[in-house]
Image 1 (cartoon, helix red, strand yellow):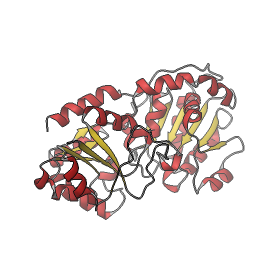
Image 2 (cartoon, helix red, strand yellow; image 1 turned 60 degrees about the vertical axis):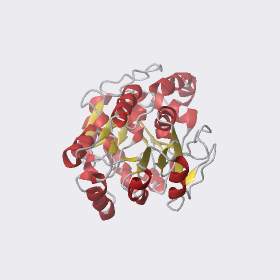
Image 3 (cartoon, rainbow, N blue to C red; image 1 turned 90 degrees about the vertical axis):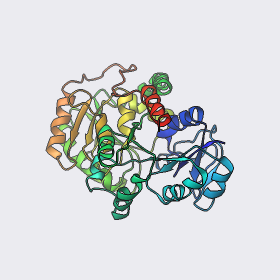
Image 4 (cartoon, rainbow, N blue to C red; image 1 turned 135 degrees about the vertical axis):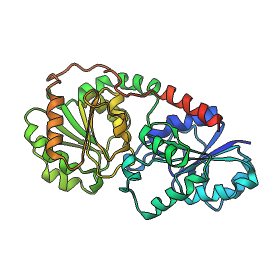
Length: 349
């Protein structure tokens, strides 16, 4: 017998979460068929991250799930969102006698109607009633689910600082080599697509271009148009991975995530862990990581002047040509504490 964790595809920012469930709950971590799953494969497909070789090459499909359940005889099955796999596992629950726990990426904004479509909204009204537990990534969303359905577990999408922080310190010499100049760095990290709302950042930054360096890290179909819109001193790095991306997090003073639709936004947690301040759209689930005026600000994605004001406030606190060292971790949560609290809640279901 071994428990099952069914994921859509491997994403680098969940690797510590996968490791913990594999070790502490004896979970077989499985990825949906149709994606290339093998050691060294692309983890977060759009950013070229790598999947750890420690996870076995095991895929699931809707067709293979009944035979997997027969073979594993799990006590716990973790399912993605309120998907067809979740519905199938619920239908087979009585036969096999396991508990079904969903991992749901809903942000509060999505719950309030700004989501990916009517099918997800319909599933959200029906499926949670049948689940044994739902893992949610922000306290506000957890509280909504508890009030509506009487269930909700909390685990933010954050990495284990005991693993990441030593790597951030290790790449400080590379950070020094990559440093584009003495001015503070304002950055965006992510896919260059419409929902990320990068044009608003470019316009909001324009009045401050003599005070800071703008860096856009990522790639996507909007890149050419964004480069044409940006001022000459904006730096577009393209997609970065591994040590190079970590080194840039050491350099970033202010990360901006102005998305109009964002289930979470793991880059917010990555930047905070490296000591950067953040300005995050209230549409993003990761806005719950922001402590207003302390580690950053939350803004409306259309509030261009408000973004400029927040940038100015943060820039006024930053020295030019700051020394590079491992800065304080500005995340309000710690992986070890949150994951052990989650384990206790799962064991009590």
